[in-house]
Image (cartoon, rainbow, N blue to C red; front, side, top):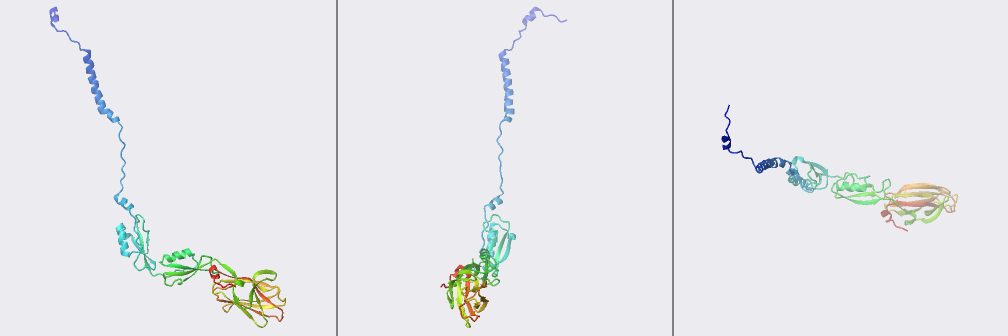
Length: 334
């Protein structure tokens, strides 16, 4: 057994020192500080707000440049110059098509392009070059489309308005030069005008007819042309229509004051060509309409067919000529 220490040995050992509470607290604080430093420096930064990513749109340089450029207007240029202008713009030679159209312009010069100048970034271009042009068939077209058809060929229209039976107002009746003939810088087109009328009785004449208000077969005609009829001696009256009218319409018969036994032959002619003829008898009337288109001189001839010595008067009841306002205005009034 070990020997028990004596009282003197116990007394010679130094006594154990106790740690101060302040030292312990400082060491703990240092340790906690180190831990918190690690946390704040490594962990917490991951929770800080990050800036939003920047959005970048990239526009190809070629597309952006083309969008700011417009195709030139090459009308009126020679073909070679037009091709060069389009090439400078960026149109490839293979994307240029040549078309031939009837036009008055000199050979080899561009008269039209498609798309038109000012178009942005066209895929292909068609150039129209002129070829020999004829007058197009404009008959039946409206005035606007006829003008456009001529302008498309480099010509302009001179419009003459004339009443033309069988044509709607505003329709083209004919052209000078005619359709199919060589195109000229100006083309005269006759356009059907709205018809107007003038009483035949109010147009100056020469002969045996006059203006009167009479009754025929019981019907009153306020603006009648009345023509006396002689027995065995035809009587003629004429009017100068100057080729400015289209039709003559009215009602024919005998004046109700005529002898009931009277018979009168009536002939209406235009430049010697018979337009209407008939035998008029008392108490009868007939409506009539004849064409006076291109008639210069209109004549009315009356001849008594009966043997009575009493009077007989042929009547063109409210007879009117038709034509355009401009044409009728040229007729000499009584």
